[in-house]
Length: 483
Image (cartoon, rainbow, N blue to C red):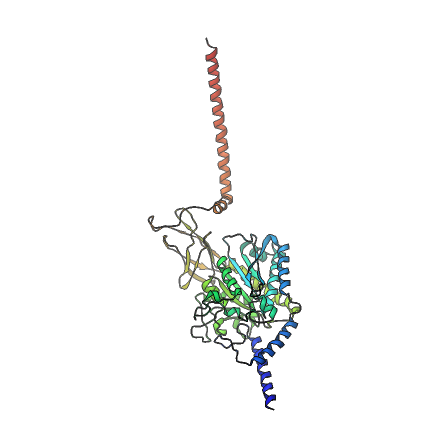
């Protein structure tokens, strides 16, 4: 009898844990402190994992395998090579390439445009993002120069898609990677000394961190499953309490989250989350998350998007989920050019681009303009007045007040040197910058006029010289013949 009761207790606890795992996408089997709960029996865990793997393996029918995904990415590039490129940002624990796609009218070229990234399949058992990002890529390919929103995105944004951050976890039907590590707890944390040793990070985590160093992303979003809500920073609190904990750009993040939720088929109608959005720490705090790390260390505004109540819905529901999320995904990317303040920073003495810092009064968060083009892209909530400041060592600080409406604001800065004695960036242009200037229409018109004038001057000078020699020749002949 005792044995029967023990078996019954084990069965109930395993199933309760399974229900909790399904309901809470970001946390899985853990308490609100953010630490994994491994308290249940090892034998029960193995039984649970075997049953769960079999169940998920059955649900995987109709989803792309890792091999299928790679073929789909290459097939997309094969027919849309004019506006795309594919590349790998690294490899998983088991050596699977982490394939990414860039979609732009000038893929691979560095420009003064904002960049956005979508990341899917952070957790191996949340595969919907894999499918949706391929559908997004192909929709943009099919509708470029046909649909205004598709054309706006391709022409004005460098969009990067990483369908699977965790291909090993997908194959294993597990939340973590091949080392059983939750990748959304593997990033350095702002509140606690954890994950600070970069050499100890998982290869998938390192790949994301190196990716951020190479490409200056303005904003991004990761796609998860298990709920229906747009989640924004902060994800944790200083005391591990479950409370609303706002980051410096709380209003901008709320605007982004509402933009996604409001464009979604039914996310904004959520009964659990007001307007279909939530502050991460208010929902439940986590630590070592990718979202907060992007904002703090990458200068990138990232949302965590829970796009399906069911973590692993049947494959025949994927098209419907895509239709529910399509407009939201497109609107979020387009917001990079349809809202916020954008511009470039130049030196007054020689017009050189300056990688200045851009600050907003009252918001304790500074971004930096790009090194090459000195372009900046600052997301701000509309409907407010902002004091925007550009500052650079060796130059006078410049501040301008703007009123942010529903449309984007273009604001360039020209900074004056503080003193000729202080070291400043040299006034020189690279060959690429010179080519950029030459390629501008007004410069080409001016150059053409200069060439025409130069040619006319050459003809006039040639005529004068010719007449001069003719006169000399006539005089010489006269001299020679005159006796």
